[in-house]
Image (cartoon, rainbow, N blue to C red; front, side):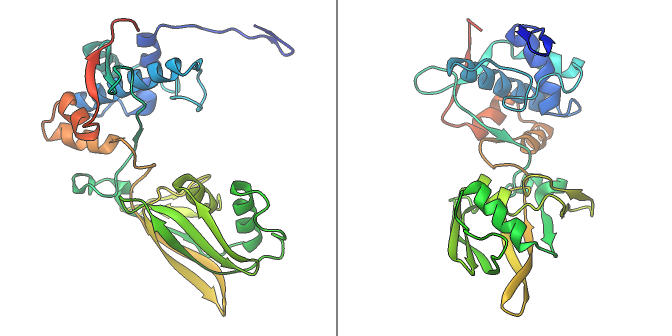
Length: 274
């Protein structure tokens, strides 16, 4: 394509070749063979579902990460072993499915670093917090530079225990932030660190690790000046846990058994027309 910046070269590849660039970016190539196969089926299904929705898949984070890691022999073998296999819904079409890193609820993953974590923002900027709330809910806080926070608490949970509604008590009244993604965004200041099970500390730039956490506020008089989250897991918690797939593969589960565990309502089928 001809753009103002010059020629833009587009490299069109078939689906199985595309997956060779996706799979090692989405799951470490050192994971067990059956976990890699399960991930290959998920990645293939995801790609076909997006194409059915009219999307043109690219190499951005809008879709699966493509070509962020070099193709790997173990991953390529998993793709070949499951060639054409996808998960379908009740209509027989590629299913809309999700996967994520680490569960907070499955004891089989208790040894994973992200299984439990602490995130502490001990020097909270009230103005920055107000601006993050406004970014999720424009116009909610009229004067973010003057807004102060008294408290915050989770007022609604998903069935699996993740936060669904977070309520702030502020000088501008009570404010609710809805949805796991919005809550994880609002609580992430971009500089505070998550402390993992082995003591490793990692800066969270855009989101706190998951929506599974409890809150302890840090108060100065009647105002909240910080907070400590005790949480678990990494990612949105929907669909297949990749570290769970690793653990079950290490216990002897086949990729078919892993997929059935995480997607009991979907069907593993051969897609003839990729």
